[in-house]
Every structure is written in structure tokens, then in C-alpha cells.
Length: 347
Image (cartoon, rainbow, N blue to C red; front, side, top):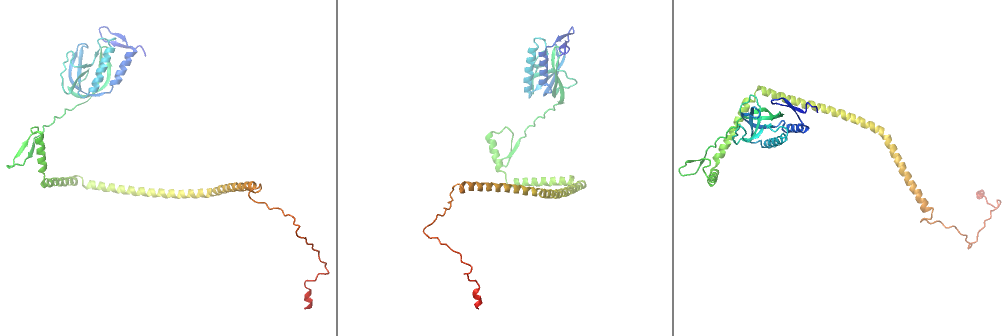
């Protein structure tokens, strides 16, 4: 931070400068950020002379709904007064409460006692919406810089309640007028019960007639103001454009679906033609793996159970039997043999 930024000029008999410590700069920045762009309602009361400043300031009282802003303004004013007590004991803070100096505050139900002292240009007395643009830290004054947003229109006074006329059954059939606030609670309950009991078929017929009249009036106004040549042509044009848009959209959607279906079937057929041999080879490979696995299991079972003394019985070897004598056959001589067809000579 340069030395020029850390000094501020003081208006007085002798134009001198005062060194501004960093904590004062931080306090000013924090206060500006707290109240900048705040919107509130205020009442421009008068223009008063401030002897401490030697000039006039405009007095704006807060509207009675700005209690949160009032608390923040008063709290900040107390903190600023305590802070500047060391540097500028006679610092004027443009936030006051009640009467001060030449200003005499008059209590009003629409105003708060907290007032803001600032400088306005060409503004008439009255109630306005204000916005806090910034906070001016001068040599001997702290002032809120306000901007008028718009004037607040005076609220309309509530109209007095008219007297209510109720019919009471009596021998003379007189109409008694009951003003609001004259009858007690039990009397009002009795009159309401009598009024409810006096509702009959004629009242329902009157209500239906009013409905019929309102419907007829609405239809007549619609036919008179809205049904014309221009609106009819516009409606027909809109319906035609809507129908044409729907038909063209449906045609484009059908064309897109057809192209998509043809391309999808083409890609599916090409994929099937390409993937079929691969699938067959994969199935054959899996079949060989499974077959080899079962063959391996069979060979292991045969080796463990059959060849190594399993449950199967091996055939016993034949033993020689000497109980029977062996027969020896001698071959016959060739000249003693009778030819197989010798008997055919005697025929």
C-alpha cells in the first residue's frame, strides 16, 4: 500500500494530512461491504443544519418495517464511534436515534426513531425506496450515500363498512337495519340462523338465473369480439399448418424407420455370415475339450479299478485233470479210405 493511499486530507483551518492505519482501512472496507446495495424504505422529513459540520443535511427516517436495518445501523454507528474516538474525537456519524441538535423527532406510527443524515438533490418530502450506494468517510463525517429508487404511492384508506340489512320475521314484516358493532355475539348468531332458515327455492332459482345470465353474457361477448373473419381465417390456417406438420413428421419418421430397419437387417445378416464359422469352430473346440476330459476320466478309472485289483474277478487258470484217460487218435492210411463218391458206380 502506498503512502498516498494511507493518508486522508482533513478540512480545517490548516490543510493537513493524517496517516490512516491499516485497521482503519479494514474497518472502512468491512462497513462498505456490509451496507452496500441495501434496499430500504425511508421517509424524507426535512433538511436541518448541522453545527458540527457547518452545513445542511437531509434527514430520512426509516419506515417502521425496517427494524433489521435499524439494528445493523445503530450497531455499526456505536462501533465506528468507539473506533474513531482515538483518531477523530469529534467525528460526525450520519446515523442518529431520536432528537439531536436542532432536529426534534416527532413520534409517528409509520416511522422509526432512527434517522439517516445524508445529502440529496432535488427531492420532495415524502416516502421513497432508497438504495445504499456506498459510505463516504470524510475528515470529520461518515455519511451514507443514498440513491432514490422510486416513490412510494400513498396507501388507500380502508372504506368504512356498510350497515347490514337483515330481514326478521315479524307480524308487521318490517325491515330492521343492524349496524356493524351494535349487536352482541348472541344476537348475531340468532340473525345468521334466521337468515339461513329463510333461504328457500326462490333463492336457488335466482342464483341459477344469475348463472344463466352470466353464461349468456360471456358467450355474447365472445361471439361479438372474438369470432370474426380474421380470427376464423387464422384458426383455419393454424389447424392446417398443424395437420401438415403432423403428416410431414409422420412421413419422415416412417422413412427413417424403414431405412433403419433395412440397414439393421443388412448388418445382422453380414454379422451372421461372418460369425457362423467362428461359432462352429468354438463349439467344436469346446466339444473336443469335453470329450478329451471324459476320455481321460475313463482311462483313469480303468487303470485304477480294473487293472489294479478292483471289484472285477480274474479268470482262474485251468488245472490238469488225471481222472480221465487221454485218447490218442491215429491217422488212417490213404489206401484204406473209401472214396466219398464210390457208391455212385453201382448205380
